[in-house]
Length: 257
Image 1 (tube, helix red, strand yellow):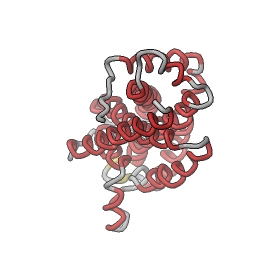
Image 2 (cartoon, helix red, strand yellow):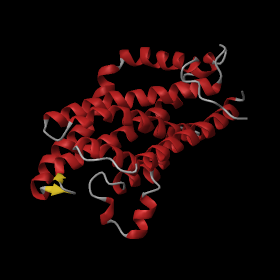
Image 3 (cartoon, rainbow, N blue to C red):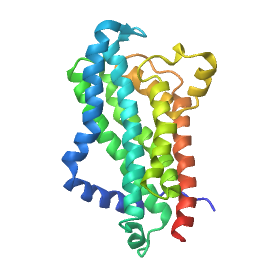
């Protein structure tokens, strides 16, 4: 059976429900999503950037800021799709209550993905503003970054929902963070160019969604021309769509719907 996301229908109700809950926890949530990337940007951008100077014909602070924006979106979407969604699905049994209404599992997960992507845009835009104040943003093209963050959020939330559907408990997410997210964070060009890696490793990295997110965001922040946009968009959308379809099937089985 093919599950079609219904972002403009019932999924909006799930998104709105999460937004209303989040408003009560808004300040600590923004602090967590914003604080760590800001420290990376300030500490490494100015500290390490003083010794490096330029990288790929741009100030290192600009190079790092674009990578931090992409990786921050990855972490925000992944952690929301795993820890928060698991809490709503299992301990709080929120999904059981929602399923007594006309909504179906595909509506709930579509709403969750939209909510995760929204949080990426909120936290990422805050980082972008700080980067601009620090002088890391090189042009008005950066105004397109929130739209890219929305796509990155949908991509990684789909992948995170698959982990949530499989997780027997919170500790299970440590495998995904350690074996998938952390290597991607280190290898996908956040701190240094992917071209500095061995050729074989470069080929593998090109299959990782974070590298495509970095390749889309970096030129926008640095004020440089974009390249291979259809490829990057298709890779991110493909990961997100595949994650959604797999997550819906696994979640339906888990909830015995």
